[in-house]
Length: 297
Image 1 (cartoon, rainbow, N blue to C red):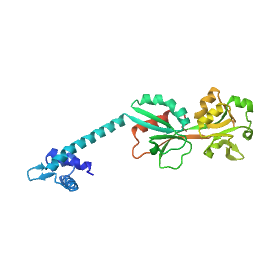
Image 2: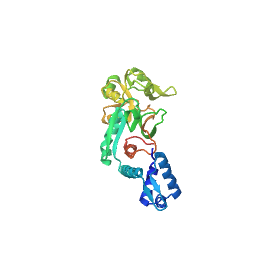
Image 3: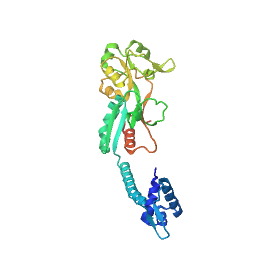
Image 4: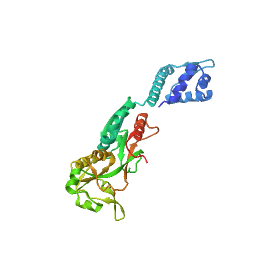
């Protein structure tokens, strides 16, 4: 493949009328320019310029290449200008992947403000409860909750959200408010179908850090567990970003609040990064890091 530098040198020789003029323009030596042209001619297997003691003259092949070289370099210049403009004013599509609770409770409320701040950006939000391959799914960034597995991906911590034990007032009226953690055995517990680590609740038990529970009713999504809790189906352990509004509105009540350990679920932006992160993606990640209603310390 022809190197861009070789085309630049070739055009500079013709425009300047000599190797010396091309060298001065490109801040190289005349001998360096001559070697670049010789390598280009050797690569193509044709002579591009006829050299005499008085002047340089294009061959037929040289005239053909010159026309195309000018076009190629003009297109490259236009491409560079467009990319630099997009860096100055981020634009384009940002594809975001996240679990539905994150989309509904964390991202959706911030979308209007983000689009107002960056009107040249379009967002595509895709929900997925399971971890997906970003490249395979065509996603630019994923928002993940909890501990991250070892990965070649890059990640930025956006904040964290405390865990809450919650139940509907109707359920607590029917079944009673547990006075201590051991009383949970007498209650219907709502939990995740997987992974098992999500069913270790932030309670102390006989010196152990965490209380493993066996859910009577399980679901794959935190949003489903929230709706089950709202319906009075039992007690759930969920992040504050999911149930904070329900607690403040009285739709849910805290359970064992005095015994809950100060555990927090971390929220991450995960992305591929080879070189500099695209401005359209970087501005979204920066915006989320500033605006998400999460704890930062």
